[in-house]
Length: 214
Image (cartoon, rainbow, N blue to C red; front, side):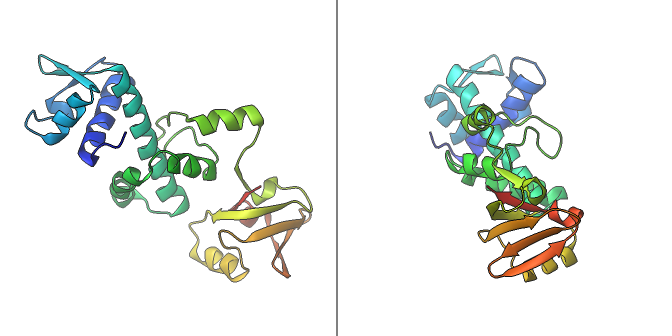
């Protein structure tokens, strides 16, 4: 089901009020519902919410949509703040815009890339998806730091996670770029890896900032 951006934002606000604050309902004014708003008609026509005396309740289908919506939002926050290093108000604003692009299927790929995080950058729970359950059952951790690879193990670089621009430039100059193949040659006393036909040595701190998809 594809809802409008405004309808999804209402479901997010409801999820926080109903599921996290434990009220069992949300006040219409508190979550920005206006009876003349097309988003209100959209939610009621799909039987996602029910309104009684100014209070808004989730219907079963609406609760599931709310769970998916808040999951996409918090995954977007993790992606922007952890990987792209977009933080503060800018990170929050961009996450609100970006979450609407994480349709079903895309959110699972982002979740796997981020190694199935359980909380957002603000410490709030990210509802798990099917990909999370499958990863736990299979023991597949998805994307891991380079330090988790064994000697002679190969993987695909997923992303670099560092706030140090000089480190970022140094790694990129080595060919550490998303999509490139990387082979860990040894892990002691330093981490030596190969990208293409070149080998490089880095310390443990820098190796922890390279995330690899096995």
